Length: 480
Ligand SMILES: [Zn+2]
Image (tube, rainbow, N blue to C red; front, side, top):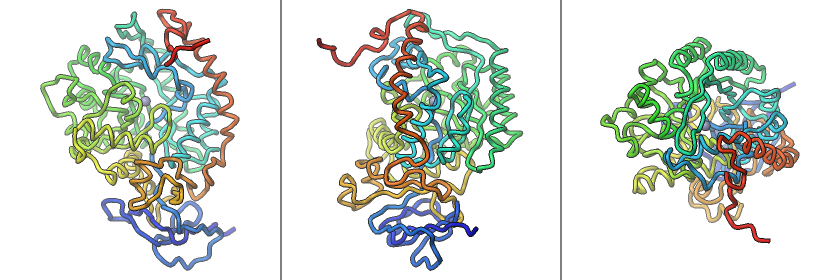
C-alpha cells in the first residue's frame, strides 16, 4: 500500500524552520504536505498526489508543542483542593504538607492519564515527558493516545514526612528505593523498545534530595549506557534548597556538577532556586553559567509555582545566559498555551520589564527548546524531513480576530479555543477540537469519585489527622 499523503493547501500563515535556520519564521500562502509520518513539502505549489486535502486559507499551521515535564499520575484529581494553602515555615509551598497527600488509587490511574493527555493534545501538544509511577496501562494508553510520549517512572529512597506544619523530614528506605529503581529501569527498556517509534523511556530519580548520591550517579550511568535521557526535580523549592545546604553546602546545580550529572541529556524540573535567586541569599552567581556550559536543560513550569507566589528569575534571563529551557505543564490545567502565556507574563513581571522575553523566543522555548532537551532535531519544527507533528489553528475563531500576528493572538488571547486539528506522526489525534483516540468523556466521569476516594485517604494520611474541611476549606462559605 502506498504511503498516504495529506496536504494543507494555501495556509494563510505557517510557522516553519528549515535545516540551518536558527529560528522559526512565518510564511504565508504555502502548502504543507506530509507522507505517512514525515513532512515532504513546505512551500508554494505542491504538485504531488494527495489522499487528503485540507483547505488552509483560514488556518495557521504551526509545529506541535513539546511538553518536557508533566505528571499524569495524580495531578488531574488534585484540582480545586490546595490552591489557597501553603506552609508558611516552608516559604509558602503547598507541596509537602498538602499536595503530597493526594494520590490516585489503582482504579483512577487510567482516567487521570487519559484526561491529562487529552487536555495536552487539545492545547497543541504533540510530545510530552510524563513523570509518574508505573501502572498496568501506562504504556498502552500512551500508545493509544497517538501522542509522542516519553515515559519517566519516578523512583526515590526517601519519602517526605511533615512534622507539624513547620518541618520537613525524610524517611529513608534504601532497599525499597532500589527495588523501585530496578523496576523503573526495566520499564524504561520496555518503553524504548516499543515498535510504534513514538514512545521513549527516561530515567527519573524523583528529586535531588530524596535519592542518595550513589543512586543518583548510578542512575545517570545507567541512562547514559542506554542513550536515554535523565530527568529529576531540582532547585524546585526553598525547603529543598535549605536541605541541600544543610547536607552539603551546595545549591542543586553545584551538587549535580560535583556528581557528574549535568549534561545535554539531563532535564532538571523547575530549577528555580539557584544562587542568583533573590530568596536563596548565596554569595556566588555561577549556577546559570554551570547549566549553560554543560548544556543541561531546565524544564520550566510557571503556572504551578506562580500559584504559590514563586517564579524563576527569569525565563528571559536564563535564555540570555545560554541555558536551554523547555516548557512543561507540571500539574493541571495541562494547557500548554496557558502555560506559555503565564511564562511570558511571569518573566516580564519578575524582571519588571516588557523587554525580558518576547513571544517569538517563548515559542522557541515551547517547541525547539523541548525538542533539544529530548535530543531531537525532527520535532518542534515544520521542515521537510521533520516528523509530521503539527497543529492547525482556526483563524476564524472569534478570539483570534483580528489577525495581525497569529502567534500573539494564540498565546495572549485565544489559547486552546482556536486549536482545531492536531497531527502526530501524520495521524490526526485532535479533529475539529475533539480528541479522536481516547474515551475522554468516560475518563472525566470517573474523576469526581476518584477525587473523593483520594481525599478520604488524605485525611487518614495527614500526620495531623485534619478533616478535608480543614485541609482544603472552600473558597466561599457554604450557606444553607
Ligand atoms: Zn514535577
